[in-house]
Length: 145
Ligand code: TYD
Image 1 (cartoon, helix red, strand yellow):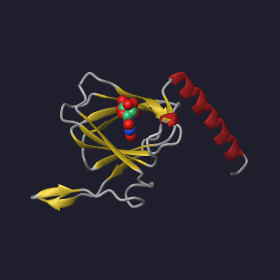
Image 2 (cartoon, protein in one colour):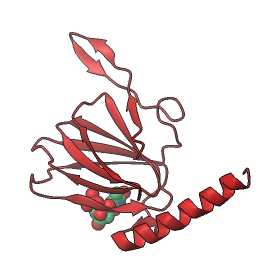
Image 3 (tube, protein in one colour):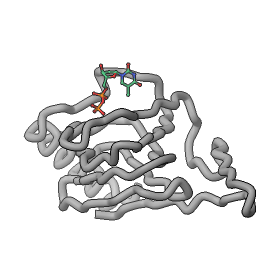
Image 4 (tube, helix red, strand yellow):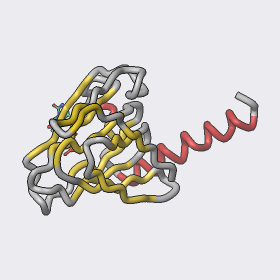
């Protein structure tokens, strides 16, 4: 699958660093929500869901975490361990998060408010829906849309 990483420009010098996240500049969507995950125990797996519409950008502002991303055509592991690395999480991508370091603070920017109805939490249902949307995209491509 295609993994979209964003290298975030770092401002700073030996005295310290700063990164700015700006809508439609280095964040490729309207920022409607920001949340952060911290204090996750090392043996805990989070996520295990996909979103029907949501786009997100994840940044490990401290520590490290591993993502397993699966778009229905294959899965890939991505380690986030650098505050200047952003990871785009598009719609219809199954994700699982694990191997959180004790100090991990994972910040996530999202283009929609929290909406439980946007979640797909059953993997078989995800595969059904993603294969349906791939079929619709293929048909649209064949018809030149
Ligand atoms: P959830 O999305 O299940 O997190 P994870 O997949 O990482 O375990 O969310 C955990 C809880 O937090 C759940 O009760 C819903 C709540 N929540 C909000 O209230 N607002 C939010 O923006 C998010 C992401 C979660």
